[in-house]
Image 1 (cartoon, one colour):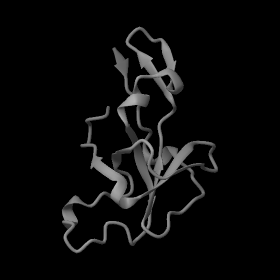
Image 2 (cartoon, rainbow, N blue to C red):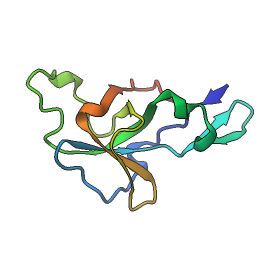
Image 3 (tube, one colour):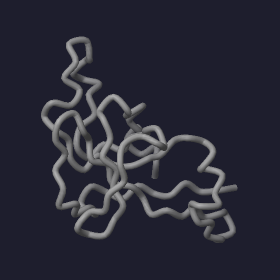
Length: 119
């Protein structure tokens, strides 16, 4: 069985990038999957490539994000939330800290991971 990579806490990211427009900057976990036996499987050969979802943490978000008239205020993701989004959305970039990040449109966030559900 595969263990999903842990999403680092917000303080682990130093992007040096600020999202603008309707974009959200997502910090990604390291690109490895580990089996229960401790074997590391690189992302390039993992089954996750076929599943189409990516998990990460919102590091920066433009004030214009989620500003839809019918979007409930209490459901809006915020900086620090762990989220799920489509694998091929946005652009890949690298933060000042060398971590891989993704700039995606606010509408490409599919869900917010409940507190403690990813631990």
